[in-house]
Length: 324
Image (cartoon, rainbow, N blue to C red; front, side):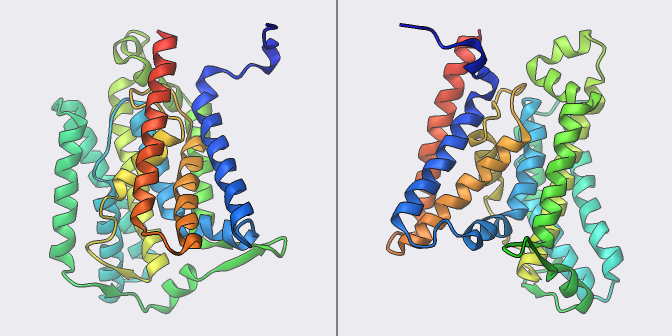
C-alpha cells in the first residue's frame, strides 16, 4: 500500500484540532440537512453572540492548561465580576471606572492564585478550588439578589451592534472576544512568554535548565486566566444586563471541556487557542441542535459533551503514547 506523501501528512500536534474541525463540520452538515435555516448566517452569528463570554473564558483556560495546570475558579470569578459591575453601576459609579475595575478584580484573584500555586507549592486544583469558593461566597455577600443594570451608558455599550457585509451581526461581546483571541494568539506564538508557557507544559524542569522565567510565567498564566474571567463576567453582564450570584455555575467545566475538545493536552505543552475557540463553537452547536430538535431535554447537551470529551481525551492519550 502506497504511503501518504509527506506534504499531505498532518503534524500530530494538529491532529486533535483537525478532529475538532471535523466534528464541527459534521454537526453543521447534519444540522443543515435535518433542519431548515440551520446554516443561515443569523444562526451562526448567534453562535458567537451567545458564547462570547465562554470564548474569553476558554482563552484564559488555554494558557493555564498549556502549563499543565487547571483553574476551577473562573466560573465564580465571572459571576463576581458581573455582580460587582451591576452593584457598582447601580450605586452610581461611572461606567468608565466600574468596567475596568471589575476586570482588575479578576486579575487580582488570578494573581493570588498564581502566587499560592508557585510560592507555596499548592496544587492548582486545590488553590483554584479555594478561589472558586471565595469568589462565589463574595458574590452573595455583595448581592444576594439579582441586580438589573439600567444605566444608559452601559446599555449603549452593551447594545452596540454592527453588520459586516450587511449579513453578519457583530455585537460588543463578539468584538471583544475576537480581540482577546487575537491577542492570545500573538502572545502564545510570537513572544517569549508564549514560548515559556509551552516549555513549562513540556517539562518544567527542562524549562528551568533552559533559563526560562518559569516562576514569573506560572504566576502570569493565572493572572491571564483571572483577567479573562473578569472580562468574561463583564461581557455576561452586558449580555444579561444584570448581575446575579448564581451566574456561571459549572461554567469552568464548560471552559475546560472546550479547551480539551479543542485539542489542548491536559498534561500541557501542546494546544492552540484557536482550537479552544473551535471547542466552544462545538459546544454551542450541540446546544443549537438540541434547540432546533425541540423535543429533547437540554440535559442531552451535557450527555453529548461528555461523550465528545471522552473521545478527545482517548485521542490525546493515543497521540501522547505514540509520541513517547
